[in-house]
Amino acid sequence: MTDVITRSAEKLLDNATVRLRTAGVDSPRLEGRLLLAHAMNARQEDILVGRMPDPTALQRFEAILRRREKREPLAYILGKREFWSLDFAVGPGVLIPRPESETLIEAALADFPDSCPPLRVLDIGTGSGCLLIAFIKERPQATGIGVDISPAALAWAGRNVGAHNLANRVSLIHGSAGQAEGEFDVILCNPPYVADAAFESLEPEITHHEPAMALKAGKDGLDAYRQLAPQMRQRLRPGARAYVEVGQGQATDVMEIFTTRGLSVVRVVDDLAKVPRCVVAALSG
Image (cartoon, rainbow, N blue to C red):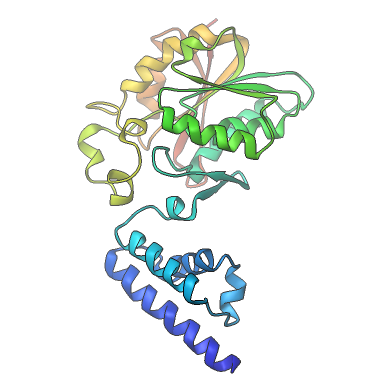
């Protein structure tokens, strides 16, 4: 009987793999297994040893498989994405965390290695809150403010702040950095940096589902950095650092934008793919 169940499970995944591959999904077998496990509220290991879904789970699997065939992001369907080994709730209206953004956390933790100081942290365009929460979790005496102009994104950030039990150390503000009072030791920001013309050529998961306002940044993809520089200059205290994500090939332009607007570029940090990903800035002088 176990062999029959195992073969049936394999047949179910084979069918899902074909459908997802036809839809243009890059890792159809893996994603089919993840979707089936999600539908069954089970672990992937349970499926690999032949556990079969009941009729209700089969209906759920078919429903979410159709969503993925339409190229809805896997993270939206699963309702979460891992970042810095932490789970973050995500869904329509919020940018999905990317692994390259962890470069900002690594750089900030390297510059502030002591866990004791009561650092003040500002996350501009906080989205899901992944940058702010990841850093705050590593520095138990730190407090933070996340700002975002999107109510939908802030709702997701609020869920994540609560899920990680940080409501006593993290505040969220609907608006811009100018509404966060005082000066900060650490500023984190993953701004929009996709040129308008390039946006439409991205994967349908991005263009049809993720919020364009979190991605598109004008004709050259640099508008957000021009707006960001004076905001950071007003909020950085002496000795503070800002950690700003940049797109591939943008580091030199962003450095020039920052230095001509009263900031000093401390260094540029590569991500794991050796792409310059994080510009570290401070007050000039």
